[in-house]
Length: 195
Image (cartoon, rainbow, N blue to C red; front, side):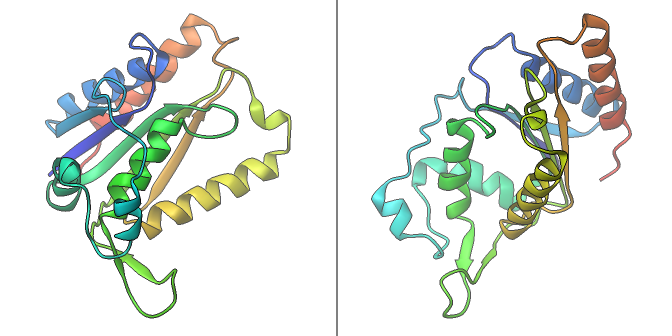
């Protein structure tokens, strides 16, 4: 089984890519297989079509997405999602990735329109988001906790279990030493996984 690393940042020399590199170094030390999905580099189309939307809940997906779906269903036990926060949210390309790929992994169950179950079962989910400032100071710490709880609930609903959400905030004002320490800790964290 492998770890899938999903990156959603168009800037190739971004801190998000440095985070991915640290995760990869840790996985290499743990002799863990991995696959990187850099959505911008892959030119992933985030726009869901009418046909895809109508197939929601019937475990059908665009044939161009088969590789993603098959890896998630059959080869992946851990997923790492890395992105910058843009206007309090994940980038549109990542939202479109969830819309298009995961819509094809859901199966309708029962008569209620929201009764569906995932056809994937990924044991560990890591969300690593970055923010230039401390955007949650604008609102409240309670709102951040609430947002993380909702995100975790949605992740579980689509088959991404045991979500851990980590936010590196204050990127614009952090020092090189602080960023390097964060990256080193991530590498160490991922070098100790035995999934």
